[in-house]
Image (cartoon, rainbow, N blue to C red; front, side, top):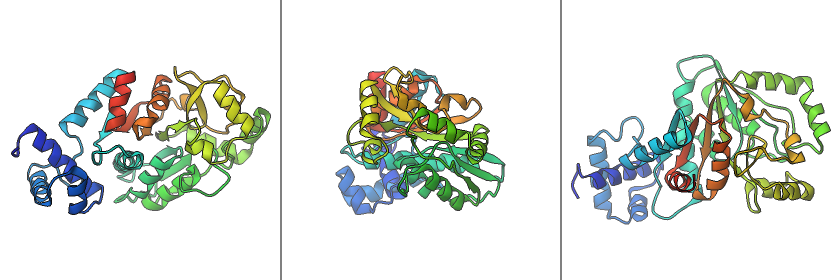
Length: 319
C-alpha cells in the first residue's frame, strides 16, 4: 500500500490518532496495530504531509465519516461523531476514552471566545475523561451546571466533580445541584426539588446552551449497580420494569419510553426531555452499551451523538 491508497490513508490516520491523541509511544502504536515501528514512522510522516495532523488529529477517516453520516440519518441527529477504534481488540475503556476526547474537543469548540455560555453536565466515566482533557480555553463567562444529584461517596465521575474540574480547566464557574442522586421516596424527591438552592441550580440548568449526557446501563456489573446508589428494592423495580438504561437520572425501556417505575420519581434531576433549548450531546463508548444507547436515542431528545466505531456499527445493526 502507498500513500493515497484508501486503506493506507485510513491506517495512517488511525496511527496518528493513537500517537498524538491517545498518547501512545511509537512502539505501542506498532504493537497495537500489528505493524513495524518503521511503518508507524512512515505513516506518521504521511499523516502530517496529507493534513491529517494539524493542531489536533483529524479523526474523520472515510470509514468514521461514513458511520457518522449513517448515524445522523438513521436517528435524525444534527451531528454524529465517531471515534476510530484505538487498536484491534475491543476495549471498553479505550472506547470510552476515545469518545471522551471527542467530547473534550467539542467542549473546547463551543466554550471559547469569551462568549457567555451555560453548559449542563451529567455524570459518568466518559464525561470525567472529557473533563480531564479540555485545554487551551480560558473563558470566565462559562458556567458548568450539574443536571442531577450526586452519589454519596466522592468520585471523579460524579456530576459535581466533573463540573468543578471543567470550571477549573476553563476559568469558568461551577454550579452544583445540592441533592442526592436518588431519594428514598417520590415525596422525598419532591421535597428536595422544592428547596431554594436546588431550585436555583435547576433554573440555571434549564437555561443551558449545551448539555453533555452519558448513557448508563441498568444491569449487574454496571457502574450504577456497583456504586451502592440503589437499594435492593429499587434494583428489583428496575428489573421488573424492563429498564435497560438511564440518562441523567431518567430510566428507559428498550423502546425509548420512560419506565413506569417508582424510582423514576425519586431522582432529583432535570429531565432531558424538558431541556428544549439545549444543544444536547450524548456520549457513549463500547459496543456493550448498544441497547441502552439505542433506548436513549429512541427517546428523541438527543441532538448530537458521540460514540466509538464499534458502538456505531452495533447501533446501525440493531436499529
